[in-house]
Image (cartoon, rainbow, N blue to C red):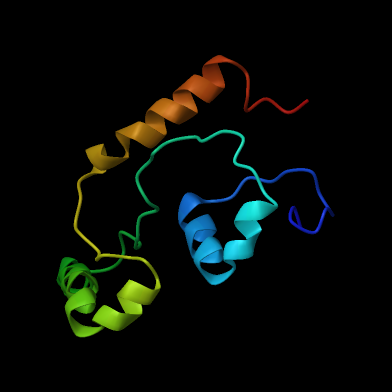
Length: 109
């Protein structure tokens, strides 16, 4: 929509933009990146606490081995692999939210 002139600007995830530019390199001539928020940790895969620890471990093992089983799919998605991280891996997001709250950015106008 930005490239077509239907809107003046939009927020887009950098990974989504990279894939779009790979598929449509001509877009680079008609859009400008005004600012960047981040870098930040990618979105997590989460499950309910009701899921048994055994099933969670099986899911985790399955997800973290997918790149080995489907390397071309991961490469085409520009994803290296899934990895297990702790909650502190998302401290960057927490800092961004805290800053936005401190300047009133999240308040509805």
